[in-house]
Amino acid sequence: MTVRRQDIWIDFGLSGLTKWFAAPWAGEVTPEELVIEAASWGDGGYAPTLLEDAQRLLASPVPAAVIDRLWCAAIGLPYDPGSVPVEGRAWLDEIVGLCVARVRQDDPSFTSASPQPPANGMLAEAVLREVREVAPAVVDAVRAAGHSGGADVVAAVEQVVVHVDPDLGFRLFLRILKAYMVPITESRYLRYHELGERFGYHELVVDDGTLQSVADTD
Image (tube, rainbow, N blue to C red; front, side, top):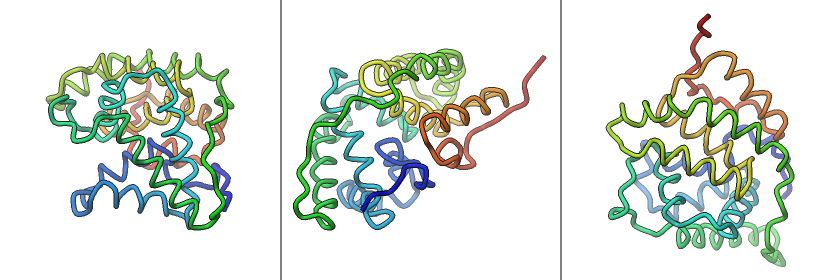
């Protein structure tokens, strides 16, 4: 089943999966069950986007510790290397296996292949600019939540934008803004939607009602 990304009206891929893990009922099922449930959304239409994100991140030089930090930040959890149950790359491997199994339910002949180069690599500078402009607010929000390492969170997002995929980096960035309720100005809010259009998102991927928009100051 092929689903156009602009028709996926919830955050998709790896960034969207973190939203499932942040749900109040997430602790009632195992992590594997949660991945299977997410991958099955839209009659399995979600699985290919999650598979692509996980494969692309696995194929990148981004260290496991950075993956762990991003995962925690996107859910709104503090990063504690000693409490991560499954190392980042091993967790991505599990996600890949579960997604492949879900795709094969509809296409038994499906063979997993290496992801293609990002289609929107030219947008990396635009995403980096937005990340860096709001970095101080991210650091403040992470600190206000009682967590440490806000600057490391920002640096981790930048690594994904540069070394993996600006599309995935932007979606993880948006998810972190939502998780920590980082205030953004209305002008930035509009720019995020413009970037989302360039990436081909449904407008609800950019804001599902949880972005904290505030009026611009003179």
